[in-house]
Image (tube, rainbow, N blue to C red):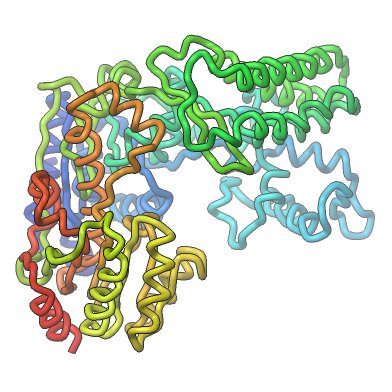
Length: 627
């Protein structure tokens, strides 16, 4: 079936059907890439309709396709909206499935063990589990009842929100699961059923973290597939670094302790594991945010060796257990599985670490040892690029993406299909060139004055984005005294509640940090002004990036800092225009955007808005569109 005809048929069925040349260009490019077996990188601006743009040609190609997304919101959109819509309106039959990590599914074996341990009330049939708080026991009983009704066991299908504690009691992580062949509930396992559905599907939706684990495992987690689509590909390098690296944290020892308690009643074995988190914290807390030289300092090296010894004693105790009871066998297996995985992580951390960087993440109370690859390219080359055709797409694509993720030069096509929105007439980019240098003591006060003036002109309706909580707090305090409009900050409510409160009151302003640079969709007049305090360069002391900078030398600023800052600024700018009728102003308070010698590298990554350096022009436009 012709890709363009199929795309036309699908888009005509949309409630607000419209001609989107960028979507057509993208769909044809995806079709050509799959047919030729050539990788494709597509920048598809807001409003392009990129999900339909890659799904239609992927289905028509008759290949097995995995779509990896960076956010749950996009995964839910694909599963709840786009794929069911295509099944109804694309005249080609296909099957699709969503596959998640094991911890997202109920574990029938865990439920059986809870029931065997707790027994049931003769009157109610409910479990009485003393180790849990009363409210948690109620939730666990609800989950057990739900297990008898659900066909998926997927937490996302719950109609109510279970607490983390309750869900953890009836689920299991991949590091703990012994596998279907070693579990009596393997034949009726919800996670295995999801894998079976995925194995039969033409389109499989996963998150990027799960795909990273698949690559890191040598390709044993997901079904065989011909094509990989990476949506929100600007996050691929960071997510791959997280998933193919190693993390040793107190949480892993907490999980192991809980597993051991279910099978071992020996404080001399379990106690040292429970105390391991404190030992790890004491060794690492003074190094948070720092790289660790290799070989590790004696304080870190000695603790890791000691912790490995504690785990080995637990392994010996587990091996000594002999039982014919299935539930006990499973508890033993899970304890061994967790212990072995943690030992493997410690062994890797104590190795040569060539090509990796070690650093301490988290905070002083919960530090974690992280070991990440300096370059994810080789891992992706052997795990993805050499095995299947890849389509990488996002609304913003860093200029250095191909080289950063190891796509061989000459092996891929890169295109920009633009956006259907009329940025030239609907959006204005205001750069406050008269502002002091961001490092100047006078800078913060000047930002507050500019903010107050622009918010007044917009009548509220402002999303102000800051590169630090300190700057956000100071601005909120100062600007509240200068304007007559409500100001919410990121500290006051959870993200979804904040966005809802902001959307429901047209005159409210929302002050937030980098977590709101992306994934916030507020169309209409409610959001008419986006203010960004500084160009969002990555922290110079970020331990992983600083190691990568050293590796690149003089090229580091142009290959790491500029592309990351450009991408984040473009993401933040993208909060403004969400529909064809939206209008507004993006105001950047950082004068470097108009003065620095690298300014055009950043500006060209932004949507094609009209530009001004005069605040009066920005104020006039705001009054015109909100009046």
